Length: 166
Length: 100
Image 1 (cartoon, rainbow over the protein chains, first blue to last red):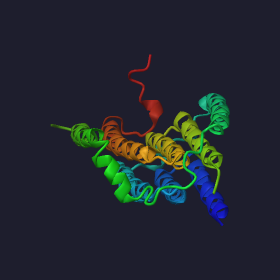
Image 2 (image 1 turned 120 degrees about the vertical axis):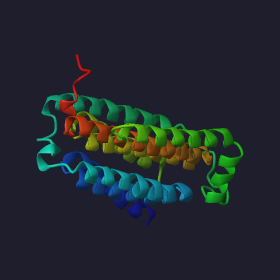
Image 3 (image 1 turned 135 degrees about the vertical axis):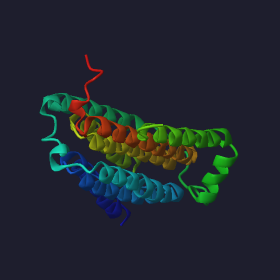
Image 4 (image 1 turned 180 degrees about the vertical axis):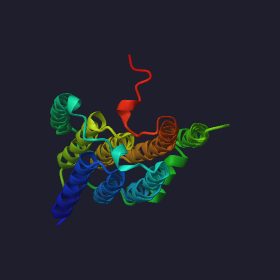
């Protein structure tokens, strides 16, 4: 049963990812991307990472994708702006790099076989909001606070970039 | 329990698809979405290793990656808007001012 859910979600996310690249309409691309993200959220739940799965749905599939949709609608792209087709000139380069990357991934997976499985049984509450929050607010307090500064800089940067006249 | 390798294979495939998209796509927004796809594949690998090692450090890392992704999306989309105002096009081939 676990494996069946895994296979379904893996296939859905990979196919949706392919569709993001393969089609030209950006709105459809966003929808496929949301599909891929939701399927990956299910994978996160299977990996007992409940908090990350919720973040995935709320932040990625929710907030960031709505931002994408807003920008696409703001730009009001005409159909010819979609671009004629994918760039054929770079196709050989893309295929070559993809093959290299896949080989690298296979090598990495071979190496992953040597990873000692430290925890056969996970501690209670593994990946829960409580456990992750405790880590974030104790051991990783400074990085956590730094991300808020990063977000502040991003807000300022976005306003400065998008505004035509300051 | 599903082996670690299966998750890593899925993550590697999604990352590769995203990378091919970045190289091949012409529309700036689709290139941008492919970058998000690659970030997400990295997240999946982090979470699967986290599960395998029984350590929650990967979850913290994914949290940081998501923050960076949100910041990157906000700034990047602002750049796309500015680009569209100046060039009236979302085609990456027409943005060649700094190309030699």
